[in-house]
Each structure stands twice: as structure tokens, then as C-alpha cells.
Image (cartoon, rainbow, N blue to C red; front, side, top):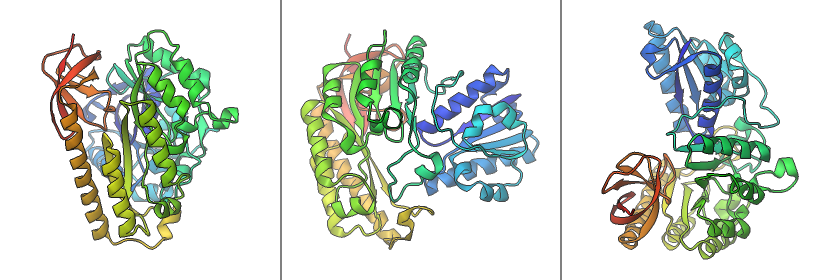
Length: 427
């Protein structure tokens, strides 16, 4: 069987695609890179927010149209959209051959031979599968250390899509990282819904620091990148470990969502503005060249003008290197769905204002960057990223002269405009 894969959503979803694709390849099936060459299209969907749901449904319609035209024989759909909507999805798209849950990906060969819905409960434990391939560039990879979430933020659908927090055993994480390193991966991004809660379910207490210490002992390790840290769980000990080694990029993706206490409380975030500021101040003190990425939600129910002004000032004061701005959207099944909503035009305007604030911040950062030397990684011979930029989501740099793809090197910033910079590789 020749299959064409459409993988949507976040890196955590991509790791699922890597795992079940590898199982199919190990069983003798072939991955193709054009739907016209395929017998079957497999769509791994995201269902986290409304825009992701729309994107997934558009891809399903596209695949089913190819099936109607007899360009492919079958269409199978899996992922978060299936976990979230199940019967509704089957009713809306009856031509789908197989709708299968995330857990059913573990027996994907039999699953794809089963018509209709194949729904298995989420596993209680998370292990490195016997087969895993890479769907990223050969020098960079995502390593999922946990899945699910226990935080229960009022706007979030993840807990009832991905289930409770489940850590991958430490020896399995280390084994996977070692295999990645042996296969030439230079940049390993550690991912989970909340990386900083790693181990709490398996070991009775958070074990993120011991995990990092074990990973750093891997022979030939390139760089680690920390993604999706929860604000008050990013500890001083982790920051000091980062500062002590060049094997961890001085970068943290730390989604904050807001800074005003009334909004954070309604969001059911487990920290307040004081704790957030304390964490950021600690990181900047312990790791002076720390690069911080974050996300904010504007227009959350009950957000006042005062709350929003506090957020704008906070963004100006703390100067995040990369930042995402999202308008709040009601998601059925979440506590925030039944809260009094803010008009759409206000949400639009606040998103625009916050993006303008961040644009001015980036202008200031860029002025300071000119002439400085940063560590960079080459995604191509003439382009890549600095340590300040995670794969797929952050800015990029171009090089003044070609370098070896996958290499990590020092470079001098010679030009900067927005999130795009030009650097001169230093031998």
C-alpha cells in the first residue's frame, strides 16, 4: 500500500505521525509525496481551536474529492479532531473509510483495514515505540517527553482530547535522544503540553531537572531546546543548568497567556502576575542571554481595558524575542464557553494593538542585535535560525556565505528587519 500523509497541528501531533508512519514502513508499505501516487490518504488532524478544526475539515474535503475522482482509493482520518468530535465527524463525512483514535495508531496496519470508526482509549503510559521515523529535516527533531495535561485551563480542550498528563519513562526518553543523536540530529526540541511537569505522574515529583542532566551525558549530543514550559514551574535550578552548558540553547518557550491577575484567575492558570514576573526576572538574571518566546490570548471573557493595558505594558517592559497573539475563541466543552463573551471587533482591535506593541519591541531588539555574535543552526546552505528561533514557529536568518546544512556555528548579525535577520558565519 502506498500512502500519502497530511500531518496537521503542533509538533506533538507530528511525533504521532512519525510513529505510525514508521510502523507502516516497517510493515512494507511505502510513503509517497504526492496524492496522485497514493492508494490511500491518511490525515492526522488537529482539533485544538476553531481555525485548526476548519483547516482539518478543508483537508478532509480535499482528500475526499480526490477519492470521488478515483485518484485515490481510500481516505483515513485520525488525530485530535477524531478524539474531540467522533460521531459528528463520521456523520459529516460518511465517505471517510476509516476514522481512528490516537490510541488506534499503535495498531495502524489493522486499523486501516477496518472500515468505519476504530476508537481505542488513550494509553495510561507513554513509551518509545519500536519504530519511529523523522518527518523533519535530518538535523532537527522533536522529542515528546509527555502527553496530555492536568492544568485544566478554562479555555483549553487538550485535557479531554489528549487525556491526563502521562510522562514517558526517563530511560525511554534518554534512549530516544541517543538514537536521534546517533542518526545525526543536532537539535532536539523537548516537547509536551507542559515539559516542566515531567515525571510528576511516574515518580511522584517533577523530574525535569534530572532528565536534563541525564540527556546532557549523551555522547555526541548537539543541542537541546526547551519548549512549552509552565511559568512558575521553570525553576532556578533548571535555569542554572542552562547557564552552565552550551548543550542547551538559551531559549525557553514559556506560554504565559496573560499577565493581569483577574484574567489569569478566570483562565484557571495556576500562577499570578507576580509569579510570572518573578520567573522571568529569575531567568534573565541566571541566563543573561536567555531568549524567551511566549503566547498571549486577548479578548478572554471579562478582560477589561485596564487588564489589556497592563498586558501591553508588560510586553513592552519584558521584550520577548518571539511572541504569538491569539484572539480568544469559544470552544464548546470548556468552562470559558459559558462566560460572558467580549465582542469580536474588540478582540480584533486588541490583537492588532498588541501586535503593534510587539513590533516596536522587535525594532528595539534588532538595533541591539546588529554587530553581536550569536549561535546559529543551518537549515539550508544559505538560511537557518539563531538559537533564539525554534523550528517552524520563530524567525529565520540568511547567511552571507554558504555553510554546511545542519552545522551549528557562531555568526555575526549584520542586518535585521522584523523577525528576519542576516548573519555572517564566523569560522
